[in-house]
Image (cartoon, rainbow, N blue to C red; front, top):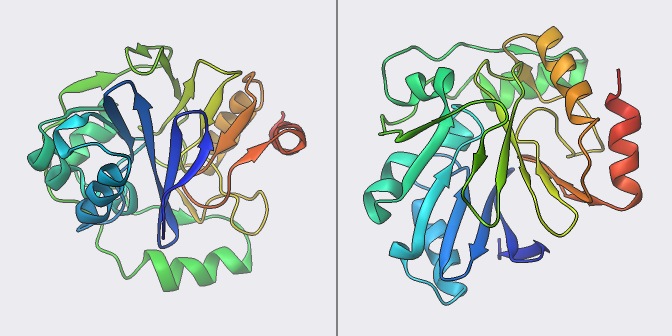
Length: 232
């Protein structure tokens, strides 16, 4: 699918059911999440459609270690030599040092069905990659005027959300929840109770727009619906 603007100098690239995001920062590009394995070609093509070159990708930021988000980080880093950023827990999975946890489906019949159709057939691993920078809760990455990390364990235990701190704020929630058929839990969690606490934490974040690893971005009244649904 084509690249779509969702925020000033921020674009979403839908790759099947998963979203990859590109942030323009002058001549540089930051990629947030990398899709499944073999997604590097459409990502690079999207970058070129912005008039940039592969080497203009200077940062790759990962919300978590699952195959639909970190599947192409190794190939994309090889193609660009970009710095990679991730929480320590999930970084050890992507480095190949720790096995990936096989998450359990969230409550609900639909999640049980989607788990069997979408998640279970995919092996719990990604091609090993170098993670240059380990990110902690509250860290502000020197990207696009400041990209603040928010530790949000639950979907995975090293899951991070990120807040782009300009133009009223854009919150990248990764897979803390989804917005495929309306706001809902993600299909799977390592720890649902932790995931609920993380969603309550995200509901307190001041932002003007929210985007998801799966589903459409929200702004305006949609931000209010997000807060109301997930507040403690």
